[in-house]
Every structure is written in structure tokens, then in C-alpha cells.
Length: 53
Image (cartoon, rainbow, N blue to C red):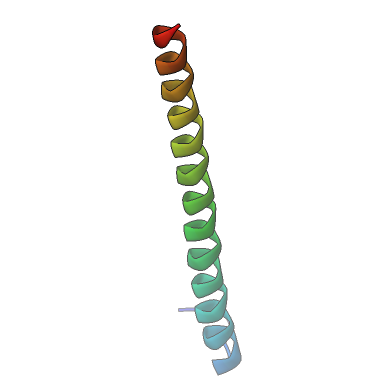
């Protein structure tokens, strides 16, 4: 048993923090995905351009 009982505000704050962490994590994943797609597409375009020369 806990020494003291958590107040309701702690539970709400934890829920908000968890939601914010998930949103920020999704944003980071989105940016990383866009970066990978941009870098790989530029690599393919460069390889195609070199093959045509």
C-alpha cells in the first residue's frame, strides 16, 4: 500500500503527459519517414541521371 494516496490531478496530468508524448513521438516518426523518403528518392534520381549519361 502506498504511503500517501495520489490526488486526482496527478492522474489527469499523467494522462495529458502520455497523450502529448504519443503525439510528439508520432511527429518525430513522421519527420524521419519523410526524410528517409526524400533521401532515397534523390538517390534514385541521381542514379537514373548518371545512367542516362
